[in-house]
Image (cartoon, rainbow, N blue to C red; front, side):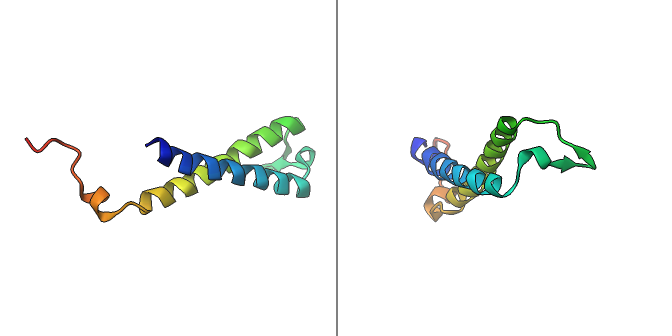
Length: 83
C-alpha cells in the first residue's frame, strides 16, 4: 500500500512543481480577476494555492492510473476470509 501511495504522490508532486513554475512564469498573480472582481491575494498565497491545486490534479491523474493498472486477480480477489 505504501508503494502505491508513493506511485501517486511523488510523480504528482514533481508535476505540480513544474506546472507551477510554467504557469506563474506566464501569468502574474497580481493580475487575476474572478467574476469581474480583482483577487486580493498575495503572490506567495497564489503560488501556494496554485501548487496545491496542480498537486491535487496530478494526484487524481496518478491515482486513476494506479487504479486502472490493477491485475484481474487483484480486482476479483475477495478480501474476506472464506470461512
